[in-house]
Length: 344
Image 1 (cartoon, rainbow, N blue to C red):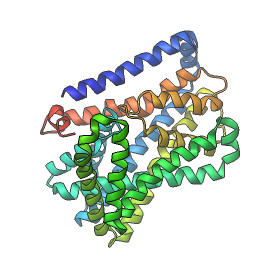
Image 2 (image 1 turned 30 degrees about the horizontal axis):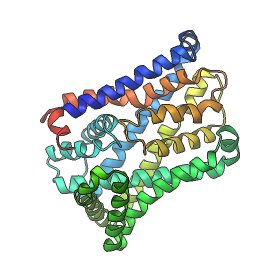
Image 3 (image 1 turned 180 degrees about the vertical axis):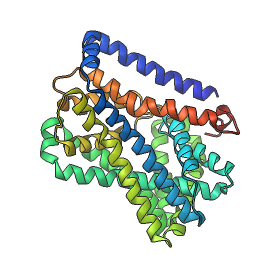
Image 4 (image 1 turned 90 degrees about the vertical axis):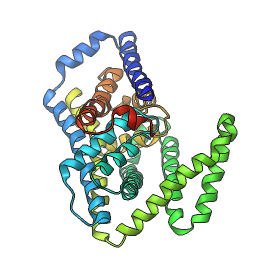
């Protein structure tokens, strides 16, 4: 429970910092003026795409569960599982709390813990691969616009894509050659521990945790690969989930600026932004998302106070997940928040 309170305080503190920055840079007057003139119909459309994002997440998870468990799933229960994962992912560094919470909640509903872990890890791999695919496609479709709107865009694109690709390679290398992938993971952990000496003795412990995730992915993939229609459908749902969340700024521009400015470019920019900020080691990528958001979205909101825009974007996409996911977590039966948190 202590971890939850500490992480929650970090999240709240970052929100306060943004408001203070708005006061000293854009000025509260500009924020109030923007709020008065905003088109709330399009703002609701923007939020509806966050709800669509959660819904497609539930469809993806339900399809994987059906393929691995061999039976249809209750979509209402799966949606609750997704929202509980959203809450814990939002308040833990690198979103690490989301997966254990989802595994625990599924196991409460008579899903074997091992299979539940396989489902969640496989969902994460589909999430990473589809995010990279969407970002690549939209990058090549709107490369020139992105380069003109975002300074050093190509460099940032390479950093985000390569980082995401390395994670994907490790998972799929494990399918082809387990020994090579294990050696690669150990080498990576040793390199990290070299720069963080206090963690050197934890290398083997960290390796065992990663190896467990890789094993779960392998088991889940081998099971569902025999049901290719389930795997393909899950991947299509996952693609739709990314497009939904990447589209939110498109409608924010319409609500705040009054126009649709190169929607495909905005989707591509948001995809890259979310790829890069996933590497930020704070709860909900707090700090990194706001800072890089100013950098990425500044060119798309030329007539608006950008910090105020970022605050609205984060309220819609991030703080709403904490609020609504928190409600689902509280009304779910079983262990307390602290019991789940102690397992992370």
